[in-house]
Image 1 (cartoon, rainbow, N blue to C red):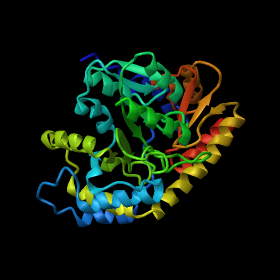
Image 2: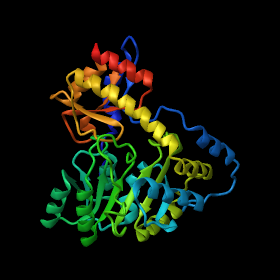
Image 3: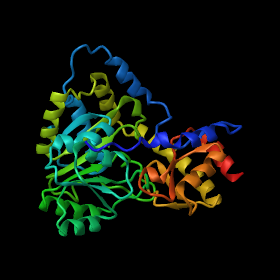
Image 4: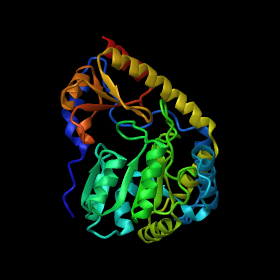
Amino acid sequence: MKSLPDFPWDTISKFRSRAENHPDGLIDLSVGTPVDDVPEMIQVALREHSNTPGYPTTIGTIELRTAAIGWMSRQLGVKNLNLRQVIPTIGSKELIAWLPTILDLDANRHIAIPSIAYPTYEVSAIIAGHPVLRYSSIQQLIDTSASGIDIGLVWLNSPSNPTGEVLSATDLKRLINWAQANNTIVASDECYIELGWDAKPTSILNSTIAETTQNLLAVHSLSKRSNLAGYRAGLLSGDQGLIEKILEFRKHAGMIMPAPIQHAMTVALDDDVHVQKQRERYQQRRTNLKAALELAGFVIDNSEAGLYLWVSQGRNARDTLAYFAERGILVAPGDFYGDETHCRVALTATDAAISSAVSRLKA
């Protein structure tokens, strides 16, 4: 296996130290980790099912899978799934990292990832020993394939982490038609799909653009919508043949979602009210922080959806990182994701922390 890259967060420790030395303390807007409480009803579900001494099933309870299908139908317009087409995963990151290995694609086939992307997509290709192809648009990806590059798996991320860009339904439909005609798997990371602000994201499995789920997989997470990052609560849905292959591997590898977490996920997926309340919190934080950044001279690109603002001062990202650190604010440099001129600013901080960040930027 090719050597893995340095873990990105280890490379900004000096900026963290500088930010921590601010007289009023550190405001961490670098990692998109939830800070708001887990909704009480989900905590209750976890407690009520804590006495589960036996092994859970890898495929997940019928109740959980039914709740997942119901949520995707209500909120994402996915109308064509059965109970064998969805399984729980231990968060989404482990699934993303291991998916090309589990699929056991021919080693010469490329793994395509967005040119600006969540680092784990590239890590997944490295672990499985596949060459990586970066693409800047759906059309450019299709054109590259036409030149003779064999693509086995395409990673899609809409809304994007880090940019917040949302792909159009037209682009998604074009990609689906191409993938199904070329025996290419599309894995769509949709962890931020319920957090659209200036654009409404569309699932790769939405029934208006996907006539069948052939070669299509959607990755979902409850980390952002329900504040369940600590529960490691994820879902994988789509092509039944691929799901069954992945399930068989996970059974042998012991990749099992704990039973109490499955019950908590079921309650979370059956309720839309708490998600709307969390959306409203993030929307207010976004409004306040975006205005302060623009007033401070930042250009905000994309950022149509998701939990981040993709900002630039027109200079190297590490210089911008230093600008924030001098004000006691830590953000993520764009070079983590393949961009040298932007920084990613997270909305995942308390109202008080966002208010303080706004004050420091204005000052």
